[in-house]
Image (tube, rainbow, N blue to C red):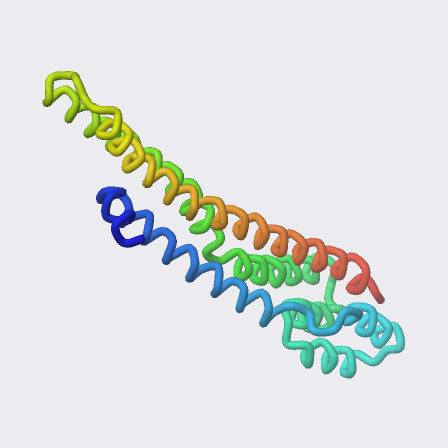
Length: 198
């Protein structure tokens, strides 16, 4: 494996760096999303029921105990329930944006790495092919098939490495984006269903 890495050329180093950064972000985001997911499947329904029965304090305790993005958002909503509609919407929008901003942290970096890794791999192949044909020209335009094939497969190593980093990175990027979108929908539904209780 080490010999293949060296044969791939200097562009294997930035691809390797991309893989390290990508893996670090993926693990960190898995930890974050797991830590902030709703622990109770029916949290919003329980809070909704408590609010309908005028048990705001119990509702806040239930939401706060969940220790999730949903619990934090519910707590904000409960506390501003009796404020004017415009003020309530503004505070809820700000709270929702804050939660989504935290969830979206570093996801753009994954998208960039996914695209850059592919391009680095392609660039490595192009530069490798250029070097191969320069060698052919140097020896008078005649080269053995083995020499030519060896130069080509070494050039293609960077494309393989780049795609090996790009594909899982983009898969996880879209997976995490799906989680963020789902959280946005959940908070929107809570804002419209629960916080219109008078």
